[in-house]
Amino acid sequence: MKRFFFIFFIMSILMTSFAVPAFANGKEGTITTKEQQQMINVAHRGASAHAPENTMAAFQKGVEMKADYIEIDVQMTADGKLVVIHDTTVNRTTNGTGAVGEWTLEEIRTLDAGSWFSEEFTGEKIPTFEEVLDAFRGKVGILIELKSPALYPGIEKKVADALKERNMDLANNEKIIIQSFNHESMQRSKKLLPAIPHGVLAGMSWRDVTDEQLAEFATYADYFNPNQNIVTPELVDRVHTIEMQMMPYTSRSQGQADRLFQLGVDGIITDYPEHVYDHPVKNN
Image (tube, rainbow, N blue to C red; front, side, top):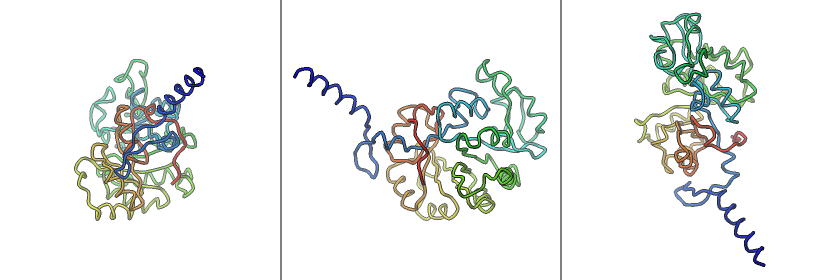
């Protein structure tokens, strides 16, 4: 009998560890393992806590860590080629200096985009958009951010053309999402790629977004992806009410990921994919 109660006690502890408090819809409850498995796991700039951001090494690490999506930032070179880099200058993440748009593709490919992170990644290159598509299509979803598109007139069409050439613009693809802080760019992109889900990124200035603004976003976007610091249960409910989804950015700690779980968001954009449990992509 003592053995029975001991086993029961241990099982109770283990079962408790698989649920965390939740406050979706403003009511306390629990998040089950099944609900956690439905959370979309987006590796921000690849698994950027583990490898230099926006490099093939970071994207491969995201795949190895079983992220559902890798998030990439797309810009354009002086000769009109699409490259994957976050900042509008190469200063921070390479051994070069100057604006991305001042370099030709041949020139920008000579830069070392890995040493700043660790000697282990010396020689990593700034990848092209097409290189990322060809390497990871069918292996992982790709969340494409158009970075500062106002600097690169026509970038929406170039991205659309690259996807269409690979038949990645189809309605049944379900593994490509395009987003930007530039909402006019997203309207242009949606017209070019009507079957591809689009998202509007929202910084801290959108803390008081109105229902009217959300309704306008919903006419061309499928995701409202805000800074995690402005996410509240009420905002999540409002976004879901108009049948949009939400994937906040950028979680950099287990505590931040846990909070977003509790708020009932649809996905988490994170530097640490390990903070989000392994799971299949959530069905829309």
